[in-house]
Length: 332
Image (cartoon, rainbow, N blue to C red; front, side, top):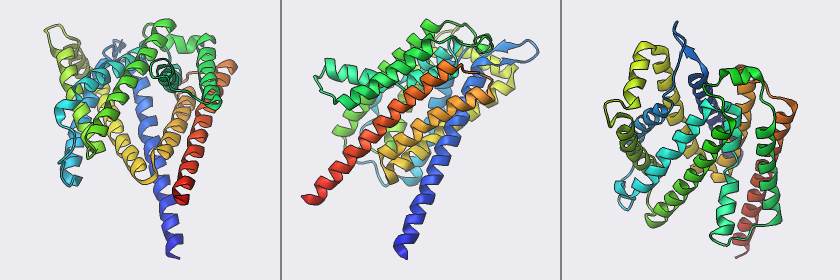
């Protein structure tokens, strides 16, 4: 009876995590698309300073992680020192800025789709630089993802979607997303190196260190000289308070989403988190198409299915690998 109750409790907790991640990040995606495409006020001005979102997100997540460490941490002895995140902070500042900036040139579904193909640069770098050998199944995953992204990029975008973009330019938009993936790869590798050296580093420590340096770099970039764009962003929010509220809610969604991701990984493992976040991206594309009026053609929907088929197959391969490892541990 106790085991049954425990099982129900885990199912309910998993449903709670799924609902939290989906709600937080789908809402954040809607707000991000809203800020990048809407014309505010009677003068119908666009919010052109999308990099300001990264600074606002850094500040909110830094404060949030600081509070969480104070409330829940049982001591940070042995964790990574704050200065160790300086290099990852650089790439974590530049990469997301490029990803957000891409929304001026391509639609939100296109950006989500390209950013979902993170496995491709990881495999390319692993094979060419480190000599890692991948299985045929892993190459099938990458071919499905790469083929789906390519098909989507080559498909004709509707005139309604293009009309919402600030500066339609598909090659530039996709190029920025690819650079975003490259910088994210370096950021992830550096974070893995830090946690390997400092074994007692918690997720909150990483969040605090990364957002501390992100705040420093973004403040310098956006307010480092009199004509810097940060001043224009603040002036725009004063003139159009609706934009300021959207930015605040955007940041809070990101902070809340991080909480649910950490909870999911700690209770159910990284594979469950990967599955939830992958399906969330697919739902985000559907929501964008229906709610924000970004109609996708038949070929574009086919490419979306291709990409998420490849990602789903990748999750299945990880699950198989995890099952084999668990069986090996039981027999030893």
